Length: 236
Length: 297
Image (cartoon, rainbow over all chains, first blue to last red):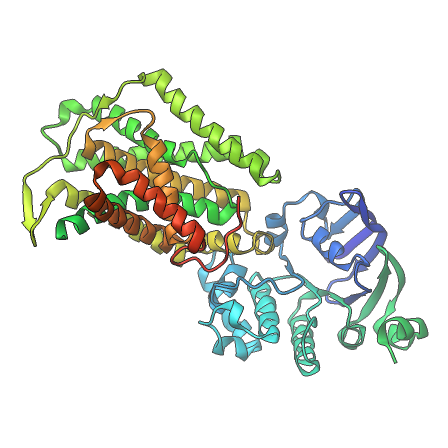
């Protein structure tokens, strides 16, 4: 069982501390929501998991792998994929090329084509737009393309950074359903969100982080009814 | 008129080959590699040495031998390009742009005066000189070697275009140019792809160097300086960072020069070329095909 364990991690950008003793776990097969406001350390957590930044102290393990010593491309090779904040679609490349890039490390071209086909089945809008440049898509379509691109890498663990950002409520719902479906097909998901309501609807468990440290954790159903969470993140 | 166009396209295809390397490297790491013209010079000298060592086999000129020498020289200059990136530019990747730019200028001097140490300051005569009886086509005087060199240049550019636009590695190159961090998240080993880009760009410059040596007959250690600046001009005209732009820019610059010299006289050639550079930088800094406004160095 490949369990993700972040234990007592400190992370700095130059002199600014982004994570302070962060500790959390993601079990295989779960959707775990990571909630918090701007600057709480959500994106830093994901960037660290992808090998873009190294923690100053603490351990990060996934199964028997030590993620703090691996290069970003080795982490992708191990099937941990990251859908970054703001989608980061390659704007002058077509949707299809974007999806192909998701399979950059997959040597079997037939497998890549199969996975692209599955992504198109999951998100038919992408098939309609396959020859369009990524930059011409709507926000929701770009989010789907970004998720589809990561799926072509065949993720065992998928990190999603604010997939609902800037999307209309109806589209947010669609995206959340896609994420649920991805989990149903056997991928573990760590979902970073400011939209706590949408995230807790599909998550199994959740963490709330503030200033780089976990302040609350529990089953998603408990967090949804927790008065502090309601006041701080779910609004009226 | 047809003669001017032909001359322009011929010289332009050399500019295009060198400009491609300039532009690809700029596209991917936003570095103006001022040592690039000197890699072209290095190509000439490699061709010079190789041709010299097999000259016993040569008659007046033999195409297979020239092609083999071309290929070996490309491998050599490509490897040198990779080494240059590794030794001089990679350690400075997160340094301010200006530091890398100055390093590139320094690298240019290293190559120029390194070659001067080995081969001396005076021009060398290339062991083969591609000459041939002219063919007249629509009043233009065209020689067979010119056609052969143009075909080689076009073939190289065709294969490059296929590679960049259709292959997995080509996609990775384009993705880094667009968004390096997102490429990392796709599992692209950025260091490898940058090395590969330097290899290809330097190999093409080396090819142009060998062909120029074989065509003009005389080479020297500073020959890369002007062509480097011309290639930069071509890259800017086409839209720096854009592959098709580099090819188009090379041909356009060749044509501009050809017509410019015809009106102003041969001594104005470089003045005219660089006046075009200044005009483009002032009025259309994104070039003919560039979309994004390029950052100023």
